[in-house]
Image (cartoon, rainbow, N blue to C red; front, side, top):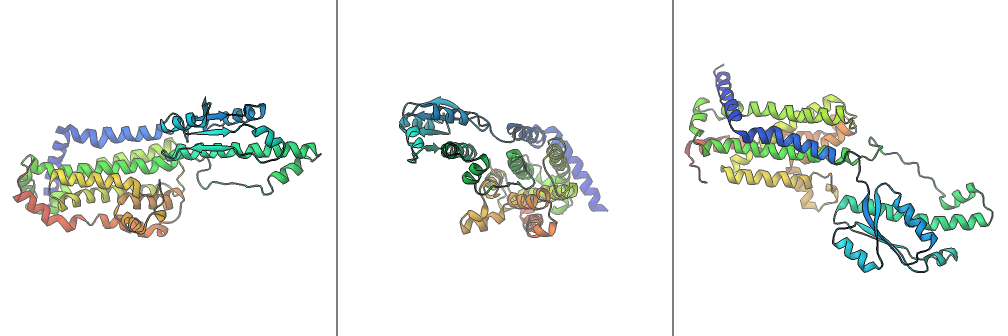
Length: 389
C-alpha cells in the first residue's frame, strides 16, 4: 500500500513536469500526429502516379509514336520529355529529372514488320527503389506490347481468329490474386511500418530524456527519495503517465488507419490492441535500458536515435531480412521494430493465430525485462553522478 502511495505521488509530480515542459507535448502528441498524417496522405492514392520518364525515338514512325502514346497512358508513368540522343536522356536520369527512358533505334518499325527482332532498349534508375521499380515495370510492358502487336498483325494477315491469336501470344493465362491487399496499395505496406517505427523513435528518446533531465536539472535525489529509495517504484510512477499518452497516440493511429482509411486487418481488433500494448511497453523499456547502459543524457539519446533509425532498415519491410548477410540477420533480432513488423504481418495483416509468431512476440516481451538489468545502475547514477553538459 505504501508503494502505491509513492507511485501516486511520483505520478502527480510527473504530470506537472509533462505540463510545464513543451518538449513533451511536441514529441509525444504534435510530432507523432504530424508524422501519421504525413505518411498516410503522401500515398493516399495507394501508389505513386505520373512518374516522369523520357523517350528517345530515333525511328519516329507511326508505330513507335503509337507505342509512346500507349506508354504515356499508363497510370504510373508519364512521358515528360523527348530527347534527341541517349546521352541527353542518360544525363537527365543522372540529374534526377526522369526515372527512366525508352529507346527506339532507327529502323525499329522496318525490322518489326520484317520479323527481324529489333532491339528496343529501356533504361531506369534504382537510386529510388519504388519509383525505379514502377518505371521499369511500365517500360518492360510497353516493350513486350511492341512485339505482341507485330505478332498480332502478322497472324491476322494470315487469317487467324482472335482466339487463335490470344492462344499463340499468351499460351498460359495468369489469374493473379494478391493476398489481403488486392489493390496493391503501397500505403498499406509502408505506413503500417514506418509510422510505428517513428513512434518508437520518439518513445526511445523521450524515455531516455525523462531520466536524463532528472540529473540535468538536479531533481534526481528528490525523485529517488519520493520512492523511498525503491528504483522500480520511481520508474513506475514516472512512466505511467507517459505510457497512457503513448497508448492513446498508438491506438488513435490504429483507429485512423483501420477505421477511417480501412486498411486490411484480418486479425481483428484484439490482435491490434495486443500488439500495441506490448510494443509501447517494450519501447519504453528499451529507452530505460539505454539510459541505464550509458547513464548520460547525451549518450543514451544518441544510442536511442541510432537504434531507432537502424530499425527502419532492419525491420524487413523495405528489404527482406532473409536476403541480408548472416550477421545482419542475427542482428535484426535486437530491434523491437523487427518483431513488431513480424507480429503485425502474421497476426494482424494475414490473420494467423498468435502461435505462428510466438517467438517474435516473446522477443518483444523480453525487451520489457531489460530495465531489471540496469535498475541498480540507474539508482547509482541518480544518487552519485554529476551532470556534465
